Length: 338
Image 1: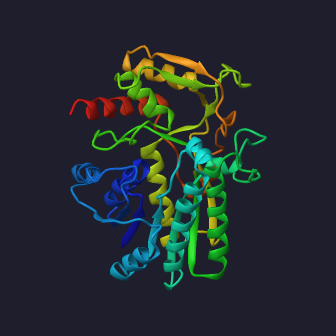
Image 2 (image 1 turned 180 degrees about the horizontal axis):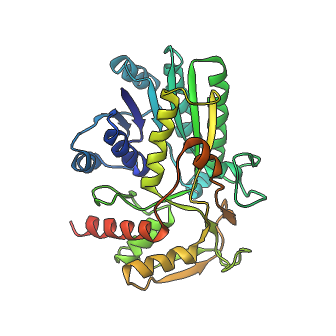
Image 3 (image 1 turned 120 degrees about the horizontal axis):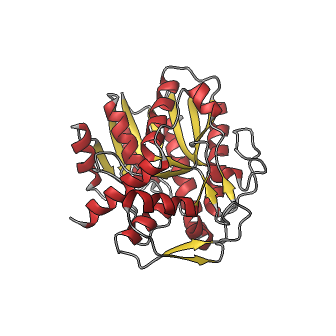
């Protein structure tokens, strides 16, 4: 069947397209190339031997979304990644985030609700938990007041999907993931942010390769073992595979409710300094970094309880932080040596 992957040329999206094609799905990608490149199609093709269909369009343009579904009227499965995703940027530009992340979701659902049935996988985030009171975080943890406009768009997105599923033929799975890192083992695709990276690992690898003078570590006075913030870093290939399993669950009608929610993480927290040390270990390079004040919108720690994903979804993270850092470093070197 044909599956739409929005934001399919982005970091997580491209890895998910690879896993979908490996499972025999026909994939059509929508991407506006705001934080990605059409060159990613070449990487996907090199890995899978098949080039997915690609439509360059902006999901904020309602008529463009309508036209897409007229053209591709056989799409009934959607994996929705397309969104702005940087916490710090969302604090500075809230309206950009609300427009991009909310309106695009609404326009997609408006088209899907007209179909006899549709399966929708939503790229959500552990940010919906805010600073959770207990670690590890389960799916039953209360959704806290969002710490950033980005986090709020994920909370609102989940509410919109849940309300829509109640009164339509759309079934959905909300995947709340923690911190995706790494690159495909082929080194054909990986994380390649445009401009200054907003995430830790590409900033580390860009510093390692000499593109950045030094890494800034935001906050060394958190109540954690080494004072730096703790996150659950999950290899992007593990994450991509979970999306395929989730989609198959809906298509095979194995879901136990119209909307299901799963955490996707490793179940282990790693501090910023531990990630730096992992990079230094796998690369053999000493990384220059300096301590900076905490950033607004950042939380102390977040790592997943993955029991539900392991037992109900039948998925488990398998790749280590060292594996992820090694692949991210290999990818960075390949990109810069072109």
